[in-house]
Image 1: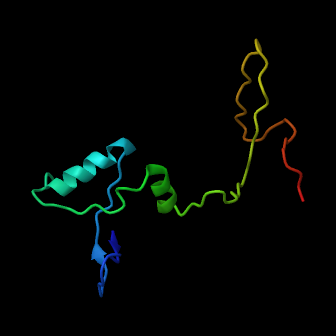
Image 2 (image 1 turned 90 degrees about the vertical axis):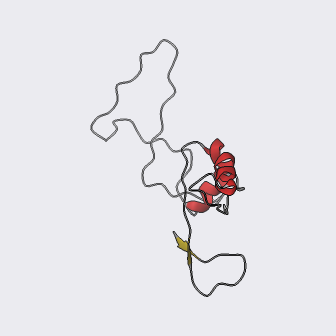
Image 3 (image 1 turned 30 degrees about the horizontal axis):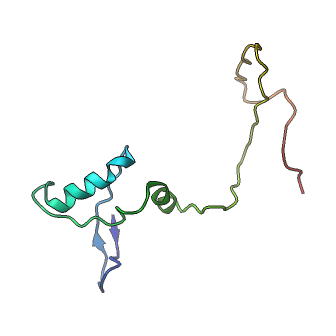
Length: 106
């Protein structure tokens, strides 16, 4: 990844490594390994390693909390009574049930 460092003055962009982890609990340990020189016998300066996982997810995908979400298609499930067998999935992609919306259209 190429970007402008945010500490100090730089005339041009620098190269950064973007590291993705499957387990967000490993972020602290990975940062410690990078800083200690355990990776390729070289010390690295982690950036944004202190940011909580969910906040980093919002930053990476340009999401905003408490913002409206526009959805192309919405489907609701009816509540299932006890003892009632599960409904067969609708494989055609269209529903024979009437549309249920908790909001009135403007």
